[in-house]
Length: 131
Image 1: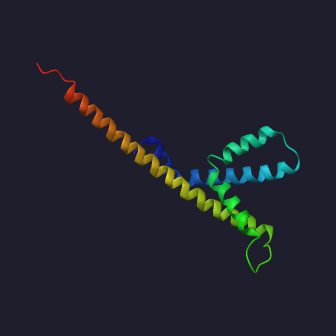
Image 2: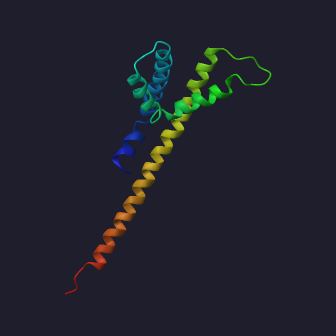
Image 3: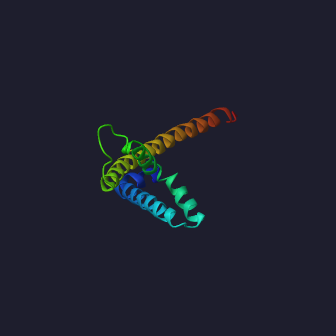
């Protein structure tokens, strides 16, 4: 296991919680400032975060917004219930994505390490001079 994945695994709750809170704050910040005509660079900066590290939060917000008012036989639930639902679903999504990225890092480091070992062994066998 490399240093990055070790660091991520050791402090996983901190990484998940902080990226989740930053994502929720960025979503709220963008939604509020959109009503007041904020400068475009703010939306670009928040959009960069929400399309990279905050992608699970962005996707859960968009998916929940798509189905929230369309539940048959029910009136539209209150906004507070929507906010709590987005927070819970985005935390679950952020956790799943975080653990998937850590596993991917561990897997890729193992694959690259095996390839480097095979390359070194190949060079030692075929590039050695027989005296």
